[in-house]
Amino acid sequence: IMLAAWYAEDHGQANYGRMDQTLGAFYEADLASGEITQREAFELICCLYIQQNRMHWPGGAVGVIVGGIGADGQDVTNDVTYLALMARQATHLVYPTVGVAWHPETPSELMDFSMRMLSHGIGDPAFFNDPVISEGLRRHGVSEPDSHYFMNSTCVEIKVAGMSNIWVACPYFSCPEPLLEAMQGEADGTLAPAADFDELLDRVKVGLAKRPTEAAAWCNDVWNKRTRIGLQPFADCMISDCLERGRDIDHGGARYAWVEHSWVGLANLVDSLVAVCHLVYDTGRMTLAEFYAILQDNYEGHEALKHEIEESLPKYGTDTEEVDALAKHIAHFLMDTTESNEIGGHRYVPGFFCWIMHNILGSETMATPDGRLAEWPMADGAGPAQGREKNGPTAAILSATCWDHEQALGGLVFNAKFTRDFMQKNENLFALRAMIETYMARGGFEIQVNVVDNADLRDAQEHPDKYRDLVVRVAGYSDYFVNLAPNIQDEVIARSEFSGV
Image (cartoon, rainbow, N blue to C red):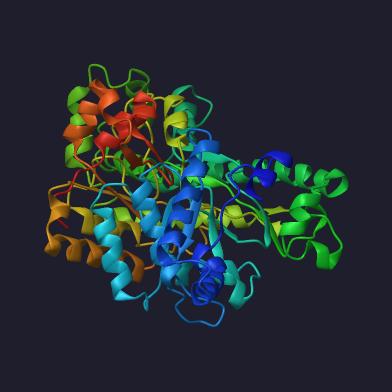
């Protein structure tokens, strides 16, 4: 079925859905009848994962989610939950990633098993917040039972499994770009100098709002065109309620339908605005035009200023009240301005993840006021920029959850990285579990953890043949480290490496 979906109608990266909910009853029936043993079921899932890696192209993303809340409101954990996780650990390949749908009643045994699995360094499972995501889905008209049957479409973009016509990552927007445009406007004289920081922020917000408005107009044209000429009969047989309605998936047949995009570099914008506010408006040390000239020079000759920005100014991800307040203001503005647009009669849906686009957009972007150099990747999700979690992972979590995540169905990533030595002690596994559950309890959307040492990553850059099976979490998806572009390898290394919570 997946091969037909991928290659017959170009539904690339169609996913398995909620494997334990889909297969749980079949597994129990076959086990009771003697048709299968637990070991054989495990081997079949392993074979499925291996086959996935034979057919999938590099750099993509296919996911499985297990656990969570069922249509009856109860926890759905069963034997297949553990088999799906164990098969991921046993095969140790890049596809599929496996996530756990967390909720307050997630069995303690499942969380402990997940921590032990993470300690092996394969980056799985990730954790998705069932109450937050399901509430976000209900805001878009999804029924209560259906809202818990969500799936990460490729990386972390959310759809209701088997019931949706969702376009994801349409497109990615650079958060720092409008600030650079406002700075350039003052530098070339096309804009009068902003009287104060608030006026500058208003200009930046106008530039930010323009992005989804223009994209929504284009997507709406394509959406309407497909309602006239789209035809996907195979998908119609798989997606509720196409057959019941007698409509093609592109003609309104799917039960739920909308378009999602993603904002990239939130932390870079927040930290850049903090730097501009301090250097231009609070202390008056330079004009905005003079700061822009320094950025054009990529901080050459201004290394001391770059060091001051990076080391002395407060940053998003350090649990600093005034910075977090700014981040909350901007994040909510980005989500609200997105949802003020419609595509196909439905609200445009925002997200905060980047796949590899933090590298691509970063490679196209000059230096930014937060100390980031030209062509360096932007922040890898909704958390702090690389290496800026100066007050530890707990502070980073507090910052990242100072704003509401439930609108961000377009996908939201929070990355954390711990050393292998840290993860070898049971008390540290308990500490990591507490950190993850704190993130979830505070409304965090998704969290994923790399357990890898920077020394190994640097050695892998020098001796890639020794590390062909080294899998890392990037920004919503996993990949073999040696297959990543050099800039992304460096970006993963630059993330803060923690040896404690």
